[in-house]
Structures are given as C-alpha cells and as structure tokens.
Amino acid sequence: MLVLAVLPWFMGTDGRPRGAARSVISLGHLLVGGAALVLAGVMIDAGRAPNAELDGVFLGLGLLLVLAATLFTCSAVHGLRRAHDGRGGSLSLILSIVELVVGAATAVALADAVQGYGAFEPWRSPLLLPSALLVALGLTGLGVEAVARRPETH
Image 1 (cartoon, one colour):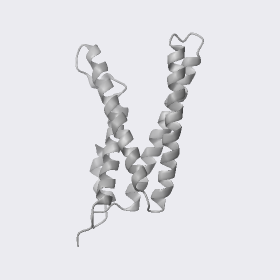
Image 2: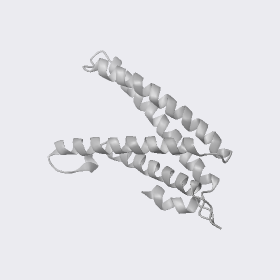
Image 3: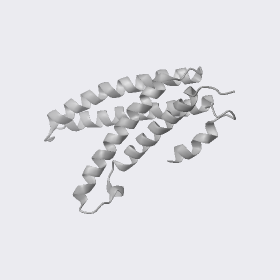
Image 4: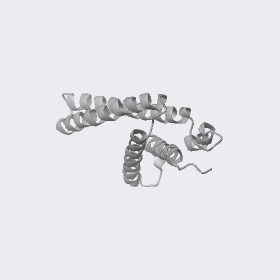
C-alpha cells in the first residue's frame, strides 16, 4: 500500500501522471516478469531432480510458466520503451489487469492455505508478500492509467 501512498507524488499539478509514474509502473511490470521467469526456472529444476515425486507436474507447469512469463516480460520491456516515449497506454493497462488478476488468485490460494494452519495467521504464508505486491502494483497501474485517460476539463 506504500505504492498507493506515493502515487500522488508522481502526479503533475493538473492531476495527470508525469512520465515518471508510467516509468515506475513499467519497471514494476518488468520486475514481475523477471520474478516469474525465476520461479519458472526453479519449477523446471525441481521437476528434473532425480528424486522429484511430482516431476511431470512441476516440469510441465514450469514450461508453461516460462512461456507466459516470457510473453509478459517482453510486453513489459516494450511497455517500458513506450513509457519513455510518453506513449504508455493500453499495454500498461493490460499488464496491470493481469497483475491484479494473478494477485487476486494468489490471495485466494493464500486464504485456502491459511485454513490448514489451524488458526488464521496469513503472515506465516510465503504467498502473502507476492500477492500483496501484485495487487498493489495492479491497482496502482490501473489508477495511473485511469487518471491518464480521464478527459481534460477546462
């Protein structure tokens, strides 16, 4: 939620986002794509281990995640280039929606996993930080794009 608190700092005096806001959001998209690629690599490595019990599952899901993460990361790189040109726009909006949906799905998985602890202690789950960051970045990206698309009133 720190991202939402810092968002007004990136806005111009007219309430429209500066180029820095879109650049920061685009860098966030790029970091999410990089983290997804790392996770996919770990899943593939875990699936190829000789003592892996779920080798087919981890290997197959890891390969699918590599494909999705590569597409997301390439889109984020393209969006970062466009943000530097001041042409951000719909690509950043789409990436923000994807992050929000994945963050919400991760939060649902977090809530399901926490039920197995016996007590409601979500801070014990490793899913807490990724889901919170994905939701925060998705909401912030949506906010920046909504303000940028707002019609000018004079």
